[in-house]
Image: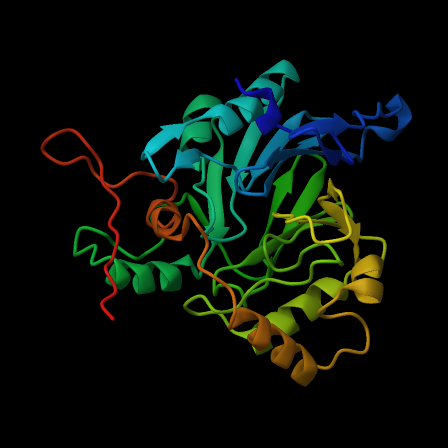
Length: 323
C-alpha cells in the first residue's frame, strides 16, 4: 500500500516537502467522560484527486459512516487500484468499527467512488441525494447508455430528501439539500459537524463551480446561505482542497464563522448578484476535470463499472466533440 496516498486522524495538516506529503498531527484521545456524545472524524486525503474522504465514528457504539470514498483510477492506462479504499478498510478494522453507512455528497466528476468496493468489504448502506435521478437522466443521454441503464436512483440503497434524517449511534444525522454545483448535492449534519461536499471550499479558495449540467450559481448561493445559517461554531468538512497560492498545507476543516468572515467568494457582505457574477466569470475559464468522463459514468452507477463486454473487459465511453 502506498503510504503517501493516505491521511488519517483528526485535524490534519499535510505539508509539501521534498516532493512528498508529510503527515502532521495525530489522533487526540478523548477522555472517557466525554465519549458518550462524541463523534470522531478521521480524514483521508488522496493527493492524485485532491479529495478528502471521511470515516465518522460514534465513540459510544463504535458505529461508523464513510463519506466520499475514492477508487483509484489512472486514465492513461485504464488501470484501477484500491490503495485509497484499502486504507479506509484497514482503519475501520483496526479500530473495530461497525460501518452502517457509505455516503456520497453528490455524483463526483473528479474521482471514482469506492462505495461498492467498501460495502462488499465492510457492509453498510449506500446513500446519496434523491435528485441523483436528474444527473443520471442527463448523463445517460450524454453517454448514450440506452434502455439498460435506468435513471431511477436504484443503484443506491437510500435516496435522501431535504430534511430527512437517520440514527447513527447516539446521534441523528440530518440531510440538507444544497444544490448548485449539481442538482443532487446534499450536506450531512451531525453533532456540530457538516460535511459539505464540493459546495464550499476552504475560505481562501472559495466555492464550487456551477457549469456542470444542472448547476446554477444563484442556486448555489442560496444553498450556501443554508449552510452558513448553522451555528457559527459548526465544523465544516471539505471534500477537496487545491492548495491555493499563499498556503503550503492541505486543509479539510473550517467553521461557519470562518467562512462567513473570509470566504473569497461569499463572505458576509457579498450579495447574491455579486456572487453570481464572480462565480460565472470564474467558471468561464475552468477546464473540465481530468477524470470527468470516467467518473460520471462510474458514479451514476453507484460506484460500478459498465457491464463487461464479450471479451471480458469493461469500457468507459468517450464522446467525440466535432468542431
